[in-house]
Length: 421
Image (cartoon, rainbow, N blue to C red; front, side, top):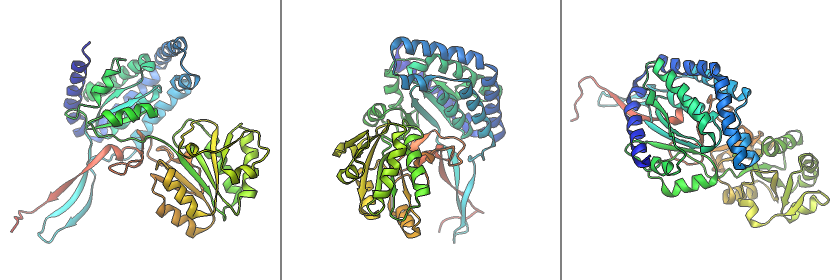
């Protein structure tokens, strides 16, 4: 297979299909989603068998347990995919919505219409459920998409792609509206991210290495985030009955997610009370605490204690490791966040309304929270139905990217024969 020729063909097919996807009405796109959901349910045994082939290959290749866990497509995961597609049907259709209509002195009326982005390339690793989630969001938002899943999930992704193509055709939409890159050759990624004539935006969902590569090589715009170095600041006026469970959940609910807390900041006035109590919670999960000198002294005797070094404040651990620092107050906390944050998600725990508003206004991250766990930074939890990724960029989309993030705006003008004088 000539990879460049193959990817050129995939790109042409996606561009051709994008017009039909964009002009399809809501009922047609929703029908496609329901047909795909029904087919996933119908073919669950087939999907499980394909996934088992991937799992067997992963075991033979000695893949890390965490990767194997992400690769597994359990009956519950299949049911969740089905439910997710049906929930997308219930979401409001953003396409064609006109907003901000205003009359101008000339007599014309000016507004903005929401439209699809066009062709979206999505690059992801391991998780086969992303194939259906991403396809569903792109269909609902009137976009064509090219999906490049990880080589470790190729059998399951092929089976899912066949189901999606079937649903599109039965709904009267082009089968090429959703395509998977049907090769494990990594050169396909290089081709996909350098085809601006066919692809309007790339969404990478993978590890830091993948995204760093794409940032260097891509000529197509990207919606992405590189790191999830998230902070929780416990203020001097925090309610401990809120602070303790928030700080525990933000770290220990799941370690391998981008919205997991990696640094805990605690106000000096409350640190002698908070840190020993939190340590008892973290000890149940054997969380290693990498503490600055002041926090280290307060945590003396904790069995998994280490001294923090400069690199700890810049690290996304994705593991049971937490950096801990005592700060004078909100000013020092925000200074620390400004210096080390990846602009993903930060939270303050406080009963001080003024401090909460300052934190919301001045902390420059995609999601900023008051009295809530950073683990809520998620498209489903935000009521977006699902998400195609999270962006900590400032242009176009920021935070969890759902249906609206897969659209753009164009100006529309209504006139009555006006001419410009």
